[in-house]
Length: 142
Image (tube, rainbow, N blue to C red; front, side, top):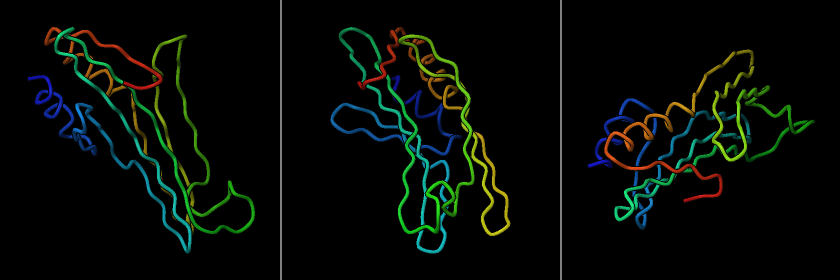
């Protein structure tokens, strides 16, 4: 079954897979910074749905940044994320491909990570096609 194959393919990633009303939700916390009265998070979220009668899988994804708390001075200078760079390529109606990289200096400590969100979509698409499904990417949702 495709759902079980997807579960196996993402087992080594820091993501969880759950099902709500025939929509599968794949999410994971990529980065979190906590400082005195301040917190910031970056989360990856993908949703997909199977249509067994048409043998198709509809897929959408996004990166979500959230923060709360108090800061001193400029909002961009809040404790946690010093700067964020994101590199990607896209075409009209096509999904983004690239990586997101976070770097910051919090209390003199450097922190960096990289996350390739296109890799997850490509794994799921390859599994769907291998099992006879068509893969449809949507920017607006499933």
